[in-house]
Amino acid sequence: MGITYPDKRVERTQQALKEALLKLMANKPLPKIHISEITEAAGVSRGTFYTHYEKKEDLLEELSEDMLDEMTISFRKPYEQSKMVDFRSLPPESIVLFDHFLENRVFYQLMLGSASDSFFKEKMTNQLHHLFRTDYAFYFRQIDAEIDLDLFCTYRIHGMIGLIVEWIQKGFDKPASFMAEQLLHIFRFHTESIMIRH
Image 1 (cartoon, one colour):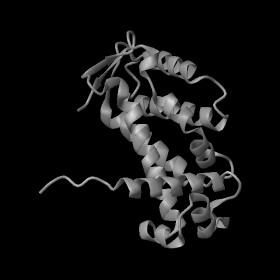
Image 2 (cartoon, helix red, strand yellow; image 1 turned 45 degrees about the vertical axis):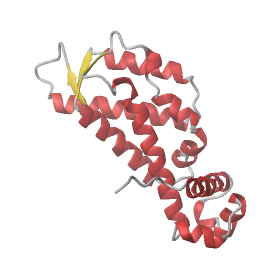
Image 3 (cartoon, one colour; image 1 turned 180 degrees about the vertical axis):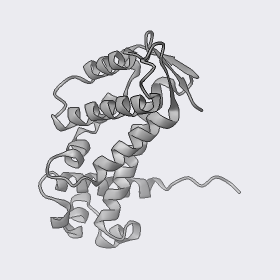
Image 4 (cartoon, helix red, strand yellow; image 1 turned 135 degrees about the vertical axis):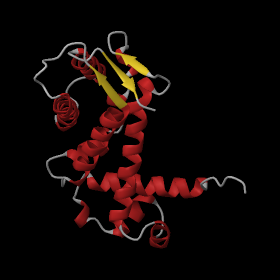
């Protein structure tokens, strides 16, 4: 059996609906947005909408999943071909995670803003936590013998996630390059390298 590829017209239609929803959400919350507004902004019929989605929440859910998939690819970019990462020699420009957030700033500011509910923030936090936990095996040259390493990793991971979320919520107040450099400095503090679990 041959490989089936997604229909380009279907992809374009779904992308148009997602972009329309984002544009509308910039002005009002999801519960107040009507399907007819989404289809009008996307330039498609209501019937076309219902061909792909049962309700607007499904559209937002798919958009969120797409974004988290892209975030995961960006997160893994610096080590996708490596078995170990040495933070002392890793160039800041190889960390493209912050570029991903910046390129999709409209989405992230809407989903993590004060007017949004917490469902996406929780999903994003869980995904980042999963990536840190499953992909990285932290190596510490020196650490206090009384510190539980698992708890220390949890502390570091949530600190880094908090750094990312606050940067987004503050409206990307610092350049992506600066954030990448800071993340590297934080990684290097007590963690000179990590093994990559493949």
